[in-house]
Image (cartoon, rainbow, N blue to C red; front, top):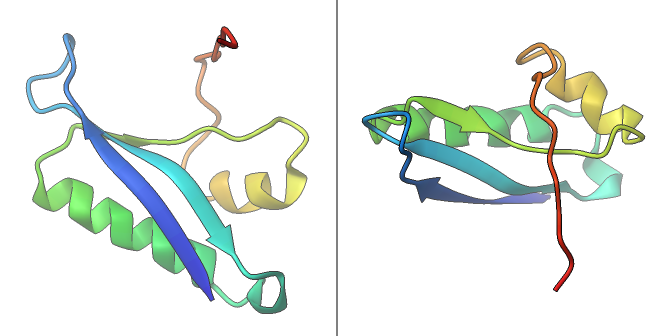
Length: 86
């Protein structure tokens, strides 16, 4: 029905590091049933258990469906991502 991929990252700015939620996917046939929320909550519990100081993720500004869910967890970050394709 869904899957997630996350990783732990050390930080210069935080003693305990961060948890980065890299991928979150819910099968289109199961969307709107709370699976995405449940997956995020599960990763949040893992991050807390590992004493992370932050759980974070990215999405495209145009991804309105995902953002409707994400906005219920946290206000939009003031950070902007920069990429260099290699």
